Image 1 (cartoon, rainbow, N blue to C red):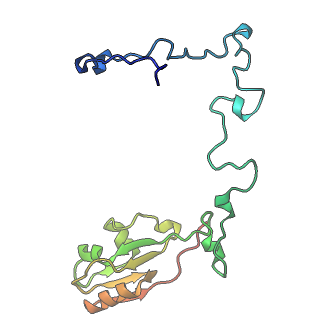
Image 2: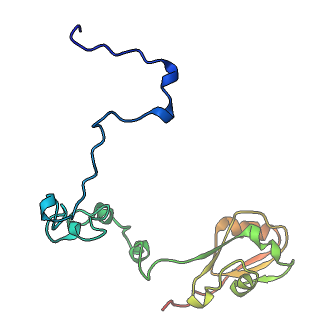
Length: 178
């Protein structure tokens, strides 16, 4: 302990943020790469020869495993007769336009609610030409009798509509998507 130099006491008023500075020699100069052969980092500038790491914006993307199938693609897909719909991509993905029962209050009592009427009121996007089915879901309340003609309806939504004095009619399958 005796061979360590003593640290002089510094008055508290001398230590201020605007007076802080690094010790001499504590900051290393930035390495200037690609500035000629004599600099030691000329020609390839420390990036090696050709390849992904040598290109601008180079480096492998997150999750890349050197050509091996990544772990997020190794996860199992759903099995069974609906496996095409279970895949998370492609033309087999199911696109249903969902409308909650509580949103049907824009229609008058006794009105016929079909996909065209829903599109006219702005409750679904006009994707009906693509053949996307419309499904009624049960969130919200309904207080008027309506005749609802859609591709599908949840059991709870059907119960709410019929309790208000309306009817639910399931129309034919959606038009085949091209």
